[in-house]
Image 1: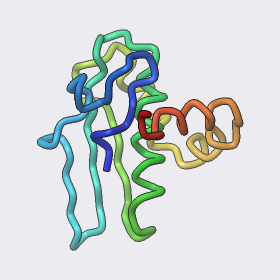
Image 2: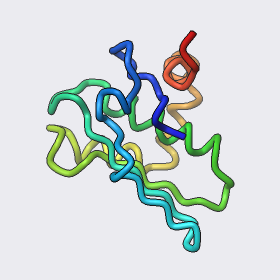
Image 3: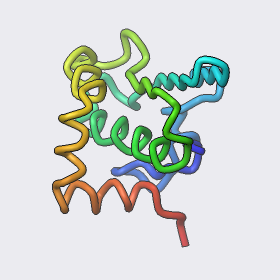
Image 4: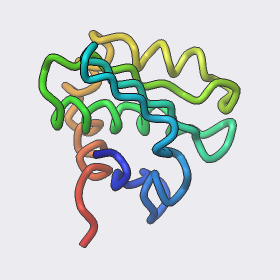
Length: 115
C-alpha cells in the first residue's frame, strides 16, 4: 500500500529511496495493528513529518477502520525524531493538518500515481 507513495522532493517513490522497506512494516491482523517505521533520506530532512503524514493518510484511506496505526521514524535516523513522532501519534494534530487545504493537496500529490 505504501511502496508507491511519491517523495515530496524527489521524482522517486519512498520505496525507491529506501525510506520505506518491507522489513520495517509490521501488520498484526489479530490485534488490528499496523506499525510502519520510515527512514528519512537525511538526518535533517525537512519533509519527515509530511512523509509520515502521507504514509498515515494512505493507510487510513486503505485499511478497515479497526486498524490502529503507528507511523514513526526509524530510531536514530533523524535529528527531530521525537518531535516528528509526537506529531504523527497525535490524532488531533493529524486531523488539523488534513484540514489545511494546501497541506492536503501536497499529501494527495504524494499519494497520486505517476503519469
